[in-house]
Image (cartoon, rainbow, N blue to C red; front, side):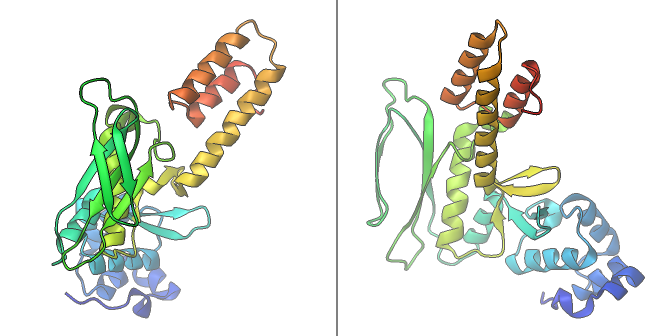
Length: 269
């Protein structure tokens, strides 16, 4: 179904006057006003009606359904609207393409035999099942659409993406593979207009890129280091060992460091 440009009929005046009815009409009544209300209160929180229309226009053009939570949106700290999907959304879009030809993905652990040659589209990966494979260091995804001479290969390190929450602790292999897959699917099939949920974190209802999150974590770590230099408590050595262990095992988080700062009396450090 073809839908009109949401900016054509929605102005600030008509937004206030007619509310979601204007949005419904701008989208050729694809969604009822009740459905629009549900969307605005779930997967499009904080949007005005113009932003809601843009979000739904994007969803329709890509072919993902917000009512099934295949696509959603948040604003960043500058109030820019960012539209997101997860691995399943990118996969659904790619599988609708006539060039779809399958996907190969795996996590890589520190004791695996692994070589990757991205320019020549070659991967050699032999997991070490006889002994401990060790910690996960990253993941790769290989996609070669039909009639394409060059394969798309994406490699991602685990460190920037590991958010340290429950799902990453219990299903780290699955999560890092999803990151690699979304990057490869987006590139191989030219999927534009939406971002991977794994490249962002949501803090206080705002989207923040993982690079910014990593920088904030590094800053918080430095705050703890500086505070410990001045700390005279008898448990100083114990806390330092705990912090080093968190860095080595990649379990550190902003919340972890906030607790340390609170414990040593430097909440504002």
